[in-house]
Image 1 (cartoon, rainbow, N blue to C red):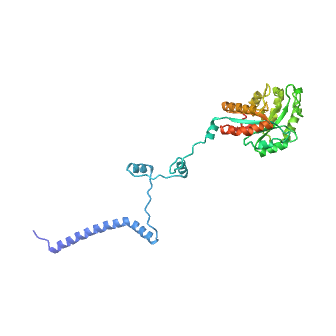
Image 2 (image 1 turned 90 degrees about the horizontal axis):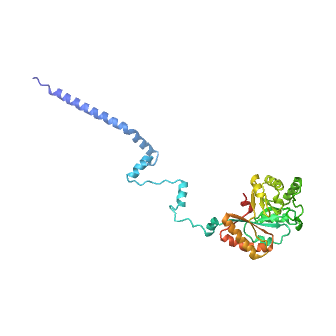
Length: 328
């Protein structure tokens, strides 16, 4: 067999080397094409002086759960509301909520007391005693008396509540000295409305009315209906002194008029010990029923007892309110 010349074998070897180098060259070019954009971007950023920043990893809920299960400690993120809630619950703060005071606790379990003082307007004799009572009181002011308007002004100044003390016909009226323009059961509707309008205008800032005497008038459904219709128009409440067989509770319910009634008369006797005993009875009733209304009068002895006893009842947890706060 004839051998190939040596130069031919050399040519084959060279061709093989060229092919191998070509293959490596192509592979190398492809690899460089895949990384060139990143390298160029990095160089561009460095030319612009941008600091190199590590990328922030965005977690999905699944990834967070997976990281925790792998032993990683999750970082708790707070909204402002959550921060406030955590502080209030004691997280991150050593301050603990203070226990409720004894007075606040007692106020939650004792009753509300409304004290109404009748017959203001004749004079200003007991104003200084009234100033000493730091509690809500309701003053029932007689219309068109010498000091009715001044009492109404002082009522607002002293943070008390003013109501009209409306003179109404009692039983055995001949035994009493009736006020001018007392509403009588034989009056016409027009006469009653005229008196009401004049009385309402005579006293500023009224929140309601109560009956002065009126044991017979409050038994007349026709008469009380006329009065209640006017009260509804003026958005006033009625406080029933409860001096007779009154039709007012039933009628007020039917007419949807705000209404309250007297539970205890405080000063039927002008005796300090008696008045204090009546205040204790009133407090007991308010604890049992949630609230109670006591009616006294513009008298020196009555106010002296109130100045002394009201602070004691407040310390025991009873809350004093205006009559308007317990009408239904």
